[in-house]
Image 1: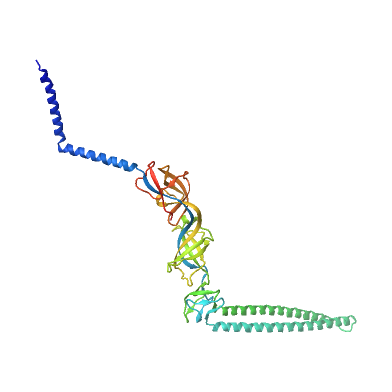
Image 2: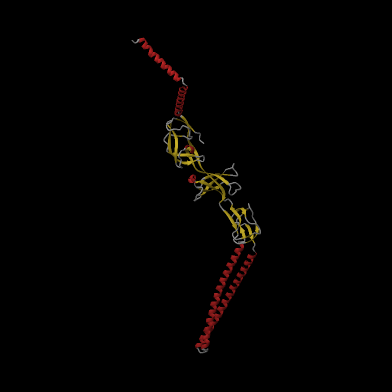
Amino acid sequence: MNDPAHATARPLSEQKRKNADFLTIFRKPVTKYALTVIGILAVITAAVFIYSNHPINVQVATIERNVPIRVFGLGTTEARILSNIGFEVGATLTELRADHGDRVSEGQVLARLSTGEQDAKVGKARAALLVAEVNIAKSAANVEKARAVFTQKQETNRRKQTLAGRDVVSQQAAEEAIRDEAVAKADVTVAESEVESAKAQLTDARAQLQYEETMLRHRTLVAPFDAVVIERHKELGSVIKAGDPIFTLIAVGSYWGLAYVDEARAGFIEEGQPVEARLRSRPLESFTGRVVRIGLESDRLTEERRVYLRGENPPARVYLGEQVEFLITVAKLDKALLVPSAAVHGYDGRQGTVWTVEHGRLERRLVQFRHRTEDSRLEIVDGLPANARVVTRLENGLREGRAARATEAIPK
């Protein structure tokens, strides 16, 4: 027979043994370390969850007023009117009256060539003109003489024809009178033609003299306009050819700037817009001006547009080819919402995606842009719902739907 008391004691002993075995297993190092890692991971997971879901602080854009939109262009100082002048004929350079840096007036003599040969040609042409004038007088006298002889022959013929009708003179004498009158008339025609020929010779002589005098004047080089001498290319005694440059001149007051502007920024540039310029040699000073011309052809290699600008207060002395930085004011916004381009994803020149704070939560919006400031901020013109605030600086942990606290960025 089984003893009830003994039966009750055995299950209790088995339970104690199992508990002892569990404690033994728990005291093993591997199990202890595993449980410790699990605990640490659980704590980390909880911390990450709490951190990633607590409200994040973000900076948001504010409305700015009277914002100038300026386009940057890098270029050089140039001259609108620049001429390389020289002689139209070739000879030896005998006189120079200007040098580098001189300011000259319109019509001022700058240089001369040797004139000995041309002086002789002018003298010959003047003599030919005198001969032609004498021939005119001589041919006119011949005309008068021929007309007088013709009148005499005509009267003689009339009388002889009358006398021949009365049989006072012979028929032969009458016929000779007719012939003499015809010859005299022909002489008048010849004399008159000689007058016309003499007039033509006179015109030719005058033209030849004018040509030789013009060629003589071509041996004197004068300033075509009020100018500054940029360079003198020849020295005394040089034998030059026709067309060789002697001086390089720029017209006084014709300085202007040539700016190269990225095509992506040049669309809003128009004539008359104000410009601020800074010369490389004078970085502490700024000069103002206006856009006066926009090139109709862009550079196909650099994808830049040429913009010409005229200064309103240029320095006393300008150096051609000096590097200049230009800022062209293309617009002034009464009020604008601006976001840095670094905070825009997928910007294609017209639109892009930005982060917004809406009702305390982060969202992403596709918005439209228009102007771009010189510090790479973009003007948002469309795509934002009412009361949406645009994030201006990307932070770690941005996620749609996450709670966010907006802090207004300080306007620049």
